[in-house]
Length: 182
Image (cartoon, rainbow, N blue to C red; front, top):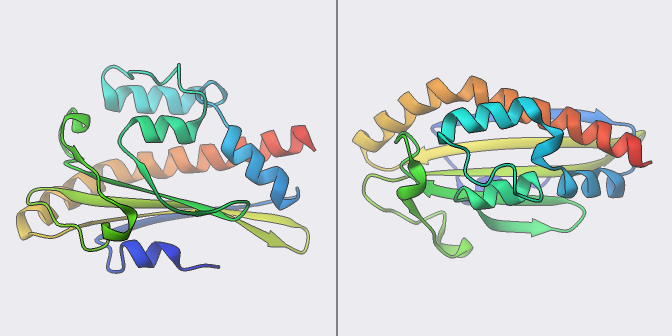
């Protein structure tokens, strides 16, 4: 497995990792990952809607990855048919974090520092196995100053169970979509 995420957040404050073995070919799983829509995840729409108050654009986004991009995530790295890494720089703990976002070039993400801002990076990996594909996702969070670390850790402790639930629901939905298209 590539250690791409470590290139962006080598020393995380928190991590969340989930994986699911899918009995479909990696190409089929990759297509399902990239075409999964919010409409295919009603429970996730509810959870994300609660976070956004209201969920602006969630129902209009063509895919879940587009939804993430619309909520301040930007591509840090990717290899077609293998993985995509998305990053976000924000004050995640704010009610409307969208009003408090930064971006930077992918090559600057690891060393990017903005007072009062935290970073998050997530990877979705499609890993070929003998009997199909291992679909894996990992999220890492970090912050620089002691005050921002405290805020981010408090937020992470609150949101982590819901973030994990969303990822597990997404993995299962991708598996169903891949099986239906095989």
